[in-house]
Amino acid sequence: MSLLTTLARLEAVRAGRAQPLATVRHRHLSERPMVLVPLAAAGESGAPLAVLLGTDRLAPRLHIVPQPLNRTQRFEFLAAMAADLLPYLESFGAEVELLEGSEKDPESGEKVPVVRELCADAPQLIVPNGGAVHHLALLGRSTRFRRTAEDPEPGPYPAPTQVPLMGRWLTHLTERAQVPGSSLLLPMTSLLARHWATGQSHLEDQHLAAQLSWHAPPAELTGAEAAELAESERDAAGQLVRPPAGPATDPKFDELVLGPAITRHDAAVAALRRSDGQARQDDRQDDAEQAEVLVKEARSQLEAALFAVLEPTWNDLWKGLDLLRALPPAGHLADRWESDRWSYTGHRDRLAAGEPPQPKRDDAVTAARKLAQREREQARLDIQEALDDPLAMAEHRLAGEAFAGVVTDVALEYSAGPRSKPRPVLTVRTPDRPHADAGREVHRAHAEPAQRGEIAGSAPGEVLVRLVSGMGRKKEPEPGSVPEVGDTVVFTLFELAPRQSAPLPEPEDTPWTHGGPPGGGPDAAGTAGAAGGAEEEWE
Image (tube, rainbow, N blue to C red; front, top):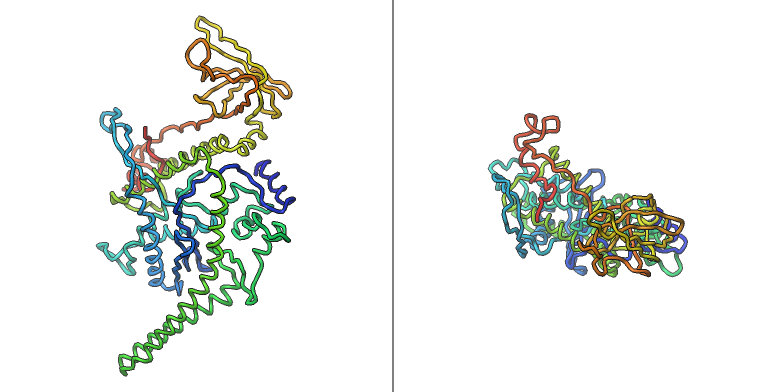
């Protein structure tokens, strides 16, 4: 936790409400997001119990598993969930942009012009917290390899056709969620924590209702009191008024509500089976019809109980979206969303090409590519947020990695040699205390084109910067390329573009010590593409 975040948390405790950590919104928000609240059964990791999802705030759709131990009912639940989720995910694949670029010819090694499709938009899933992301990842892992009735050898318990396809989408979205700055799958608690600081710990922020309580506490309560009330308030029946839901359930709910409701449903289903058998023998339809009514009533009661648990979190997710939409978008947001669109387009194309599902474990090259991509995207995200947001830049200024100030003097100097070049020296008055060692390279923020300099000297409250680039090719600097006296400038001691990592070998060229031939699997060469590794170079 940075110093600025710590100060903001302390201020939140003092003021009794959340404090801003950003002046702009650093994550893309879709105009039509899919809000999804999953619920898992206690005692078994990844066992689905219910899900509330939809794109309409006033019309959520509920799907449940009446008996989580019943394999058939699980697949029926997953098929119903896929029937709602897949049309949304696939609806963004039709409208595309045609982009001209170039890529290397595998035979000649020369660059050849190509035209590629880029989806004009991409889907976005909003879930309550990181636990919900993990739950979706488990669902994806457990379903993307399932055999269906259409397979040559379906085996026992074939899954509906759309279930493995949904598993592949969930795996792609949850893997993409690990890329810094990605917005295809967003946990609301992390989203709010990036933009506001509360007076509680990061772990306590994982309870969405408690986190939101810091933003608008009742007049008679502080944020801490409102958060405690959101976590612990119970109704007359002993149930939480605002359950965590996503994906954990309250033990009291499991004991007093969920367990008896499942037992009633199981008993009604057992009675229906007995009455069906008797009806075939005694030709008595009345008992069978009455048993069917009891099953429907038991299921309705179970749905009502689960909806009551999920609805508060559903409403909280939309409240969080309202808070975030009030912030203006960051300047580099479109660039990061374009990267998400490329990721979505790539997965769409892999599905259309009939490639196999993502492997359970990545080969060495794919794992290295993913790690390099995430490191590169984290560096790019830190730089872009600092350029877009004064509060983010303040983090670097406090750490001595940047400084801002007013230009008090400009001395036009030239380099030595037969072709002298302009090397103006700026005197910058600043309240910051950067690590300004003489000769250290600095970069001017918000300069177009990019401008580099070096520290020429420093004194308390003052830094001398010698500009060495970004002033044109003439002997005299281009107009406007050198700050004037009275201008406010910001310089960073870190580069304003992430460095590219060294290229990695193809899986078939990887040494056996790193998982390549001859010890690699027979499909090692195709694993990288199926796993959705680092994006290809595109110019």
